[in-house]
Amino acid sequence: MMPGYRGDQYKVRVSNRELEKLRRWGQWAAETGVLNDYLVALKTVNYRLAFEPLEWGEPKYTVRKMNLAVRFGTFKMLNVWYGVHLQRPLVFVKIFQFRGDYPVGHPPETP
Image (cartoon, rainbow, N blue to C red; front, top):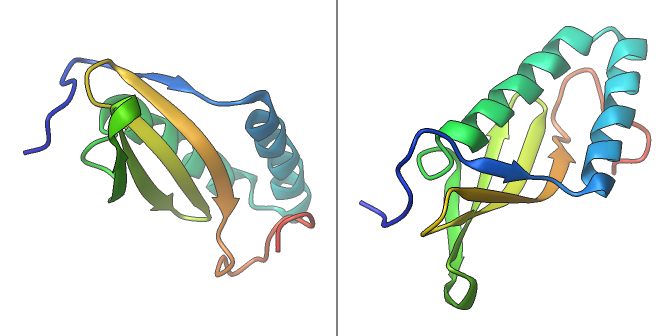
């Protein structure tokens, strides 16, 4: 069992740059007809980050000086790299990625 916070909910921090990217992806999803899938993915990822960050995703490495467990999670068309503070109820999203294997394609600015 990994040490860490085990309370009701974690605060999830996402940079404005990543939030704007998610908004653009939402516009693309609406134009492509996959908005429902996209919204389900966002809601699921948000839930996992807020309530199950240490159980969801694959552990990648620990940044001991910052007390962060870095993990990689994926759901439907989204990947997310995030850090979980091991002593406080905080999650820091590093980056969202659109999966390259999503059958409908991907937003234009993603490789």
